[in-house]
Length: 519
Image (cartoon, rainbow, N blue to C red; front, side, top):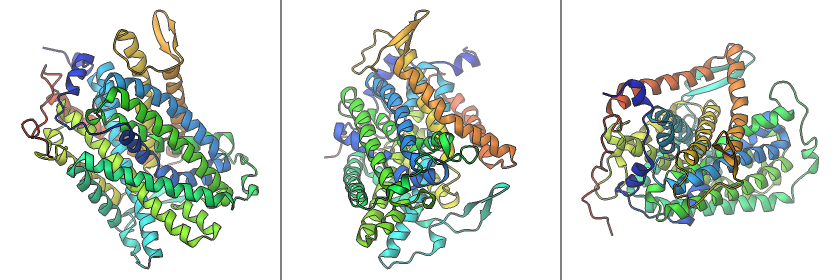
């Protein structure tokens, strides 16, 4: 009879992971272009359309460009680590699966729970932002949407004493409708979802290109002076503000991780997943820098602390038609992010259900479409409830914390896997080599990834503690409450039903094994 400690740290073997690659029951339909667009679809969205303006107005000013470089560097190291693991263990589940192989079941559960924060809760925030742009676009087209239908039930008000909750704003029906549409698309099938996502990504990239081209001629260089505004205390501007802004926008880069959750549906995962991850990251970093430069050059950064900063910039260009196009691009962009986030979270839940850590409901596939349809619907209901009730601003920092933890563990996993299984087949290896310390290989790239993740997380944690010391316990209470809820879920269900803990193979893909694929 295994002890509790041995159960908590029991690991999957790479051989078991390799066997599961061919046993998911899901169809392999995604190539390198679709994987790249899946990543771009998840990355480009809230980071450009919402978070860039807030980070510039409250923390970095024009130096938001440096914040993007910092966040981009952190993501490069994490992305290279993801690429190696994705080529070595090409299965659905991403950081959750990698943790299960290295540090064991308890760590895997923690990462899976963090990824719910990173994907599912972030999806609710994206849906809330989408509803604001959609309401503005409809208003420009002559369709008035009452404010009570596109604001959340709960909002936050900043006062000298901290943030306070205000009830009774409304119910965000537009956000709920967006989530319902995305869930319906994902239930229909991943091939159809990927096709729609590809179109949306191309549209929003074209819109952002138009914004940059028109905006270059409207830039006022005086808006970039001073490039780094003087520090006003804490993380408000100056060099500390650059790092704080980087931590704010860091979660917007998590789209490349969505690519790694698609291992079970990629046609050639060893070759195509590293390409998709790195290509998406490079494309999006370039887009972020270009848009942020135009945004802060056209409009003084002090005016960008609004939910729709690009719309403010377009108004300053005196281009009404371009304003309609940009708002349409924002709706399309945030829609593709919502699609990618919901896709990624449903596949993580699917993998956890097969391992017995979540109810089998999340691992049940549609008898014809071969998608985890019931789990996707349950996830959609939870996201819709959060989007209808909770404010967008209170979620961002918590999502970034979940992202940094996931990225950091992946970087550590590369080091562990290299030392534990030195002869494993690795179609892609992180560059720059490493050094041996006491016979242990320490990789340059994964070590830098861990260091940058700590750099991104530190301002967030410092702010959480500072807010609590000033009497505002809400952000810290949400984090602690979320952790306690995860602990209860694992103790109450995951630990008791773990397939690995009972020496059982993963649950079969229910409803899909004996069904002929459509078409």
